[in-house]
Image 1 (tube, rainbow, N blue to C red):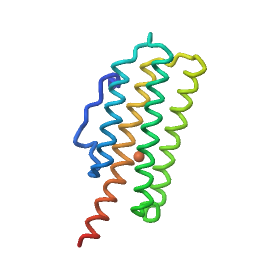
Image 2: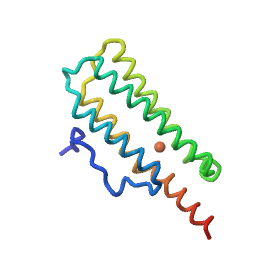
Image 3: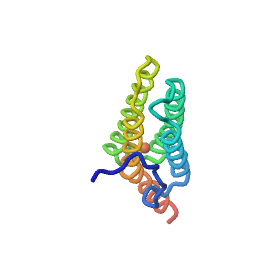
Length: 148
Ligand SMILES: [Fe+2]
C-alpha cells in the first residue's frame, strides 16, 4: 500500500525542529500546501495554478533565507560544513524544480495536480524531518552550551 500524499499534511510533533521561528514558517508552508491541495483541481485555470505556485515560490524564498541566515549566524556552516552545504543545496534544488514547474505553467502546459502536490508534500516532509531537524538540534545544542 502506498502512502496517500493527496491527504492534507497534519502538523506532527516530530516535525518540530525546536526553533520557534522555523516551526512557525513550516506551519505556514504546510497550510499553503494543504490549501493548494484543496483548491486545485485538474480543471483549475492555468492562472489559478500559476498564482498558487508563485505564492509558494515567494514564501519558500523567504523561508529559505531565514534558515540560511541562521546557518551562517549560528556557525552551522563552519561546525558542520558538509551538512550545511547539503542543506543549502537541497533548498537550491527545490527552488529550481518549483521554478521549472512555474515556467511550464507560464508556457501554457498543464501540470497534473496530483503530481505537483505529491512532489511538494514529499519534499517538504523529508526535508523537515532530516535537514531542518538536524539544524534545529544544532541550534538548540549551541544555545544550551552558551547558557552554561
Ligand atoms: Fe531547510
